[in-house]
Length: 207
Picture: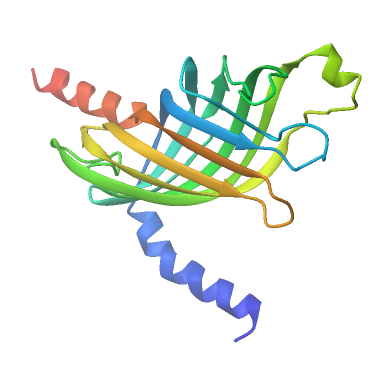
């Protein structure tokens, strides 16, 4: 089957599901309990940096689906305020921007009308940077810290109810053209604002 024909078949299969799906928009945010980033090696300075304190995560998220299953796209920006390399302190701070597509099942679907458990699995691409504040003596050694890319996989396990969900997440990434890696483990809360507002309006109108 040609690539073009395959795409047409997939679209026709998905169209009925899309037509009867709900759309939601909201946010996701939380904290990293642990993060570690490994830059592509420059053969000058230690390439990794990590952190367990003051890691803030927040960003937009969109859902398409129904009660038991959905697909979502999110961009949870991650700021590590005290990320550093213990082996050779070069400076502080990290920033990561993952773009993730997920399949969400059960109460993590974003549309589940009761309290229950759920799971999500997905993947995408993450851009990360360490040593946002790079010390001058390392700049003088020609050490550079720029955004590097990793291909990521993520697993979520948690509970949800009426458009909200709380879960623990594990995200690992690797760049196959270099030795760059990323690891993020944390606690997140997602709120499907569209679904929450719809249900609040329904309850108020019933009264």
